[in-house]
Image 1 (cartoon, helix red, strand yellow):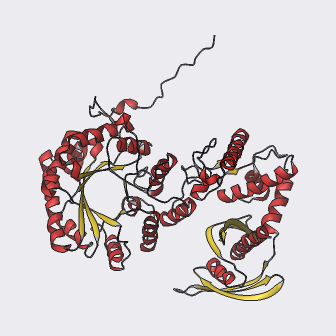
Image 2: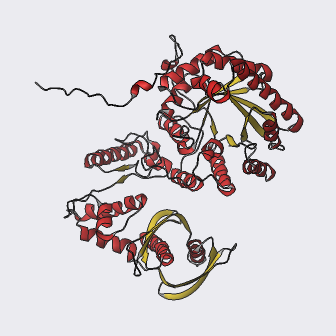
Image 3: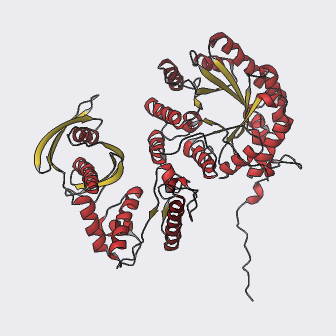
Length: 574
């Protein structure tokens, strides 16, 4: 008879923590509902997401983020807290004065309930075509008691007085603006739901929502306190008891403290919410806001149009990483480096058979494979629909008895390839293994790597480099390269030697079209004779691939890496 081991006490002080007390909704209906359409989305990347960054976005990075959100299709974008800093105020003004806001996009700005802050906030919106002021105040008992010392009556007074000030200054300063109003009882999930309802009703009494004059009631899980079903119960209860519901948009603002923000959002949408606020890749305070990428792609994977375009998810990820200066986790749903990669042999076999079956079905139906319903083991969506590809990463059982390709290169040659470069080179090894069969030894791995990345010198080979730079000016570069064996002197300018080099190469006749997408470097050794390695991910025309360069000079190594990518692309076209 098998004995089942008994669990032992953890020794952790769990008695200090109290279970969350949910609202009672015995006749809840949301479990029987289905999500059949996308909600209204609001991106708060430029406000909630930005305030929680280690290195907050510069105005340049903010503009790049705003343009990305617009290009993806977001129609409501919270662009800042203009009364909190001159930087935020100036950014809002620049968007308006430089006419950067498309006609179908509504910007939103946040404020606390103080008259001077509200006036300053509304001033930032002068000249905007469509704009919303988002007012919030604390309603949760813990915050009222500990942080502010407010009674419930005080709390209602702050919310209604703030709403009156918003209306007053909007009437004075925004006569030509399609003006909207949003109110948030913070923290909704820790506020007794009946009291949150009462505050929102009193705010609505002031705003007087009607046809063509909605009010957005945003119900934030500012700190996630409970299981997702409890949030759904709160939303259904609130929606069911709210007067003027037809003129009110119920909005969600979930955070991810318990790691269940996506689930809480989806259940709350089933419970009747109309709108969702979040950030790309879940940026935000502490564990972050709910991830808009995951939510949108979850809809897509169920055959629902997310109303946002994720078809080039790598470019989205790269742009967000540039703007936030934070990496996206390699296992992040839909967008991580490794999410369409199989390491297990059994997984690879199942996926291979699934893709072959899709090809067979497409052939039988006389359609391109991209037009037949998607079904493949282990892959919830077709990676090609988001600009990715499935990769089978071979694990090399080398003579050392240790892991895969990346391990061999790092252990034997001190090369620490970026993850996407690891995946790309593993594909090269996979092709060689499929062609020749048998085990790929460490020596063979190095030989293949050397010939694939380091040994290519056609059509371009670097001869000499000279750079010039001055404070406040772009770098100028003069470089001598061999082009199909003929020496050429080229000149380029850019924000750094790498950018200037790409500018010089793109000036060559012959159709070069190079963009640098990612860059990594490290030393291979230390001391006076140290060698550096550079890895550059490039778009060469329509092809995205990596180049690798090694040299005692890191600048020279990076330029060699660009030529490695260009020469690899040229070889692929032969």
